Structures are given as structure tokens and as C-alpha cells.
Figure 1 (tube, rainbow, N blue to C red):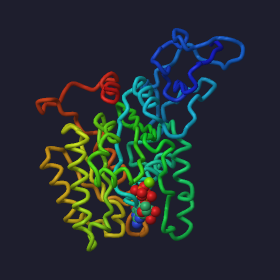
Figure 2: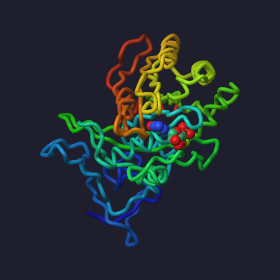
Figure 3: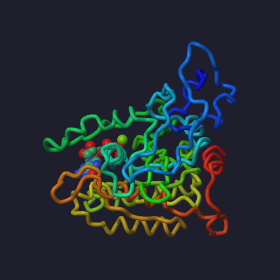
Figure 4: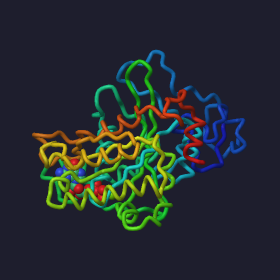
Length: 342
Ligand SMILES: Nc1nc2c(ncn2[C@@H]2O[C@H](COP(=O)(O)OP(=O)(O)O)[C@@H](O)[C@H]2O)c(=O)[nH]1
Ligand SMILES: [Mg+2]
């Protein structure tokens, strides 16, 4: 053991088990300062992904070095790049109109992870943005006691209106290879989607998603079976067309069409959702439609959280496609970093 501290305030070593700029030994990092005004730090950073002698229900240790540097609210693009330097992180864009159910989807995922109710085979492995998730989930923790309020979560407002912020969630497989998956998820206000539908000139704000590992388009299932369905389908088609043509999302980025509030439509997959999936496929994308109920208003019939993890699982298990349609070799940390940065 030695004493010292990182001069970079947002160093993620405490949570990722790695030095912010990937020095296996913190002493070799130029930002590390030894001295008396500082915290205790292990010189040898243990391998987080060691597999020996770990029971089935035990989460691998999150390395604690005396101080958590991260503030735990949303991450900016620079933070995301630093995380991606430390390990592969899946960047997933969660898009859709205002009130489609994006924030509820993210809150449901977080509550399942932190409450230990992820589908069998997966467990929570930490978050660098606990406070941001908690802020969104405030109020939802009590919903079991009574009827759900009409508005479940606060309207999403970004700290920097023109810059996307990201939520981080790490999950881990319990099975043999105990793969750890770091997710970076967007929670953008619906206005971003609405504005891209209105004007192609708004495309640059979505350009960071060219490096995404997957995109979830959240569509309100109730709208898709209402008399407004044709207008809604037209809007989403226009949105997809702009993501493809104006933003330039590559054909290697898989899509999930998440049909939200499906508890209120008896978990039926609307015809118009299939039409949207086929539209994505006609443009050359891989697309999966998933019926979901993040917070069910009919819990006796549909369990809250239905479809939420399935959407994430579909994307993280999607094989990357190479230039010529082939599957390239296994992904590396470098690739994930470049995918985001360049
Ligand atoms: N029945 C039902 N309603 C939902 C569900 N998810 C969201 N909602 C409703 O949709 C509203 C808007 O959700 P929100 O996540 O804030 O939408 P966002 O604007 O896309 O982030 C919530 O206040 C709920 O009333 C769900 O799974 N089931
Ligand atoms: Mg929202």
C-alpha cells in the first residue's frame, strides 16, 4: 500500500478498478500524487474480472481505494470516453417522442438491477451515475403501495440542453464466463426527437450516436392502436429516415423498437409496430420489436419490467457487422473507444 491521490477529480478507478487513463499501476500515472494530504490507495490494482472461487450469487468485487472520485450524476461525452478507455462500454441511444416512456424504461431497468430482480443469469455490478438514477426513480419506489400516479417520473431536463448526458449501469452474467457489461444509456428529452422530425437541420445533435452499439426507439403502444396511429407511424418513419439519411447512423447499428405501455394493450404487438420494424429492415438495419411494460398499471396481468431487459439483451448480444456484411473479430477496448471518439 502507498498513500496518494489522483489529481483528476473524475478518476473512475474506484468503480472500474482501473486507473482513469489505463495505468495498471497508479504510481506510473502522471496524475497520481503521493503525499500526506491524501487517501490510501492499493498500488496493485486487482483484476476485476477474475473468475476463480466465486459463488453463483456473489457479485465480483468493485475495487475501493478509499475515495470515490465520481460525482454520480449524468456523464458527459468526455467522461464516457474515459470509461471506454478502461473497458468496453456499450453505448445505447434511447430515443422517442415526449411521454413515450424513455425515462420510465431506464428507471425500471435500474430498479430491477439494484433490487436484484434482473432476469436469471444477470446481476447488478455497479453504476457511476447512481444519483442520476435515484433522481429519476424518486417516487417510483412507492408505487407498489397504491395506484400508479398519472405522471410517473419528472420530465427530462438536461444540465446542458445541447449536450447529451449518459447514464451508466454495469451488469454481470452469473454463468461460466461471467461477462461484465458496462452500459452507457442516453436519457434525452423527447423534444430532441420531435425537433429532428420537424427539421433535418437538427441532425448534428444526434451525431454522437453514429458510434452507438444500438438504438432503442421507444414508441407508445397505446398510440399505435389508437385513431392517431397513422400520424404516429408517419412521425416515427420520418424520424428513422432522418437518423439514416441526415444523421448517418450506419447499417451495423442494431435497432430495437420498444413498444411501451404494452400492459395497457394486453401485450399485443400492434400491426403498425411490425410495419415500422419492416421499414427499418427495408433501409438495411437489423430490427427487433419488443413489447414492454416498464411500470405496469395492471400488475396482476403484466409484471412491471416486462420486455425492458429483453431490449437491452437484444442489443448487447447483437453481433457486429463488418464492411462487407461479415462478422469481424472480437471487439476490443480500442475499438469501443474509437467508435465513440472518431
Ligand atoms: N401503463 C404504462 N404507462 C407507462 C409506462 N411507462 C411510462 N408510462 C406512462 O408514460 C408517462 C411518460 O413516461 P416518461 O418515461 O416520462 O416518458 P419520456 O418523456 O419518454 O421520458 C409516464 O408518466 C407514465 O404515465 C408503462 O410501462 N406502462
Ligand atoms: Mg424523459
